[in-house]
Length: 504
Image 1 (tube, rainbow, N blue to C red):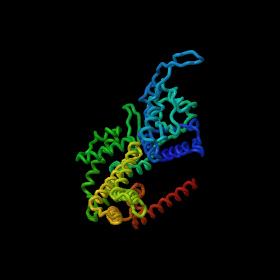
Image 2 (cartoon, one colour):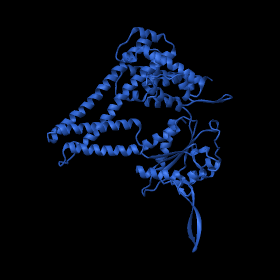
Image 3 (spheres, rainbow, N blue to C red):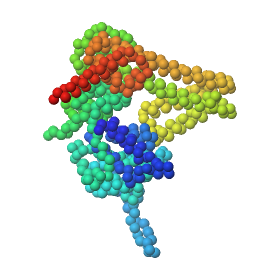
Image 4 (cartoon, one colour):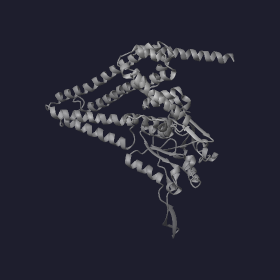
């Protein structure tokens, strides 16, 4: 299955394992909660989805790569203690708590999260001395003499033997104690993720044209060559930082991330053209409504790669607009929920001033966000949004302190006015994004009319996380028109395929 389906399956497993009966006991006892084992090539996102799952389920996460551990650190160190049996004293060997088990308890203590995921990576690469310990761990949820706390789900991951010479094949005894999930790379699933996380548009447009280079791992007489989803995402992050520093990555830089010389060279050449097209076509001018006939004619006669690059540039810039709308919408919604708490009609507290109420709300908000941040329950976007809301609450509090007339109704009126400004900012971003989308259609229609290129543009709009979110609210007639044609074409292709298969 692809990584998206694997993520859903793990979330469903966690939901099932953490379900309790009327007495507060887990419906599936810990002994029957089979550990999940993700098997797949390197770089497809096995580790990354664990962080996402923990945040979305609001549970803890402790992650270890087992190859970094010796038997002593995994099981614990031996020490001698005195015991009495049958009235006689004996010296007995015991073990300190495993570093891994201790980390779980530390996570519980530091975050207050009593349930979570213990993620063990590269579990099928354990050393000879650790192999028996792993079987005990998978069956009894223990390291040495210490048990993993109840409520903590074990998820493991590993690579098939063709990707790692250190892999140990699990025997039937071990395999019969786990939930085995095979994960395969899937570009369309990754592309949806890439749009949401703002992967560099050159990477997306390149892989749209050369999907076969998305995940390639080969062993030849000259060595191992590979390009992985993780490599593309890390390269994307580096390119964006390079651009901020006014630098351009060359073939050598690309090769540091895409360790497949032929693909690295191809992408480096593609990236050079990407920068050329960015300068030639002036995307911001197009989205602001300046449609030049010379550029339309140039694009209509351009090679396919150039058309893909320009559409990638348009989609990237549009996605930035759409994200701005989504961020402002979420920011406004979060702020509204907090300000409702100081509404005089819903809050009967007449002892505190409005500024004091705002201070209390902001303090509670800050403490809640701090706890979530320290527990690892916020992704990067959420963290930024929550910081913005805290700053807005502080700004409103300061404004009320300065201008308060000691009249609750008047203060509340002023708060509503300040909130209205945030709401109007959302309306402005929304309108601007709508105009940019319409101008993009103007340019593409002038360049391609209703050609196949327009289908590609609509397909990418339907893939982008922020574009889909925006188009749920914005009524764009041409989008619906072309989308309807696209769906009709898909249906027509499906019918033709069925007819062909019946004739065989």
